[in-house]
Every structure is written in C-alpha cells, then in structure tokens.
Length: 117
Length: 110
Image 1 (cartoon, one colour):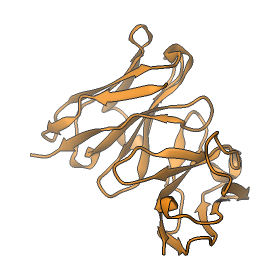
Image 2: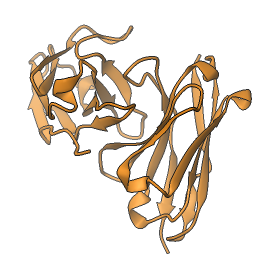
Image 3: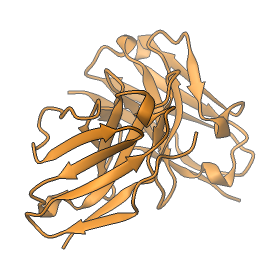
C-alpha cells in the first residue's frame, strides 16, 4: 500500500522558515516524480512545486519562486520542501503527492502551515 | 498560471445527472489530453476520479465520466448518490511539468 506522510508544519511568523518532509513507502520512490500542492483555508487546490524522478529538474509556481526549494532523498524515500520568507498567504495545508502519469493518484493527509504573528 | 474556471456549485436530486465544466486555455486544457478530476470530502485528501480526460481509475464507479471539447473539459456524474456530495476540482497539465487546478465546484445532492 502506498503511503505518504507529511510532517514539519506548524505556526511560524511572517518572514520565517519551515521545512516540510514527506516520508513515503509502498512504491519505488526513485522512479517517480513528486509534487507539493497546497490548499488555503476555505480555498481551492494550488500546485506549488515539483521535482522529477531523478531530481534533475525542479519546478515552482511563480508565487513561491526564490523562496521555496524542493528536494528529495531517494535513499530515504523522502521528499522535502524548504520554505523561507514565509508570508500570510502561504498559510495552507500542504500535500505531498505523486502519480505515474499526468495525474495524481496518491496523496498524503497534509500538514498545516500557519504564517501569523 | 491562472486557475481554470469551474462553476461555484451544482446540485441535483438522487438519480439525476450533473455536469461540471472546467474552462481553460489552449495552453492547458486545450493543449493537452491531460485533464484529471478530483473529489474532495471535508477533512480528507483529494481522490482522483478521472484522468487523461476520460479514463477512470480502478474502483471509481462508472457513473463518473469525463470529456473535453476545445478549451473546456467536463465531468458528468450520472445517477447521483448521496456520497457524491463533495467538492470537485479539475486539473490540467500546462507544460514543462507544471499543472493548474480549477477553482472548484461544490456538488450538492438535494
């Protein structure tokens, strides 16, 4: 069974930093591209970042470019999102997501990031 | 990337059919046959219901179907059931390993 478990969320002040982790199991992690999505309270889903299967390329939504860094450790089957310069509008549940094609079959339960003073 | 446009809400009685539209541009919906649809119940992670415009993952009831014409994709739920009440989001590939979601539609079973 595929499992994705996010951690690292919490309350952080504006301008602060946070590192999200996603621990995975049940599939060959190194073969899959991985993604971070987010959902602000009462709002819709938003694509945040992606990293291809070998970590050779990364992608970011414009609003987080220069502030967020996605990375992966295939030896630990884990995905990370380093977030800095956090803003109130970054407040959201962050989901770790993967899938074999151009869709997303497996989702974690999400971790809540709250940016507030 | 601008979010794809979905109606805010649709509703229907049990047994009826409802259709949710998802309008994008030639850079996303119209440019690729990679539209997927996600069902989200409160407090739960989204679940894929349709992928590659019209394909159904194993375990998804066949009352869920998808289609696309030009820059607009659609999700139809036939034979609406109480458990179908949820939020639904479309998602399209937009090139260079990026994706864009729709604004979301709340389906209410009357």
